[in-house]
Image (cartoon, rainbow, N blue to C red):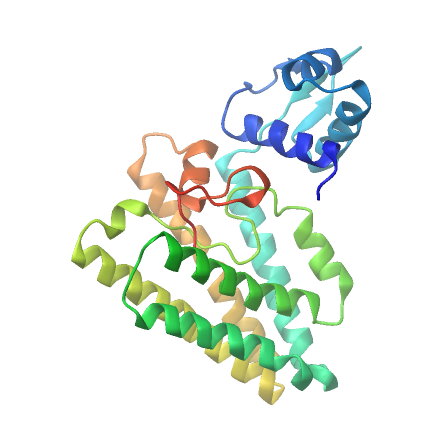
Length: 258
């Protein structure tokens, strides 16, 4: 179970990202204690965590100022994650013991294929696909032989679109048969890239593993730019609705991610 301060940090972070607090707004420990009905100690620990993440900064005198990331910040963070994941793929391809880990990647790929081949795009299938997608990416990050790769990814995975394995999903796209077909095609393309990455790691081709993973990871930027065209001004709240991640990276039934 998560500690009170971690859960509290997630709630405060979520309120900041969805715009409950405005940029530059001052928050005090006493205010947060009253809002969430907790004592000073978990509030101070939560604030300390949010300061490290950069969504709060200490103001002059007492109190803290809201420093909400922008959509441009998210795109830059996605670019960083893409480089980290591609580095992880290259490093894993160079590991002599990689063959002991490859079954985890193969299993995730096969499970994704099975889900896609059902031809059903609903809450359950999307949740299962997202889970297997996360397994594929997390396995590479944690098994590449460099702990700082996964550590650095964890520092930004609280942001919309930055959870490991997350792929943006527009619920409106599955309201028609044509939209479902496009979605399934997109999912097959993503898993095809997984298979190329898997094969490159299997054969020890670090250069190919790195290149394909970078292309695969950075498709998120393309989706964000597509969403920007649909909105007069794309907000972090919009990105959360597309990514489907709520407090603690839990999926909401009305907002899906895969």
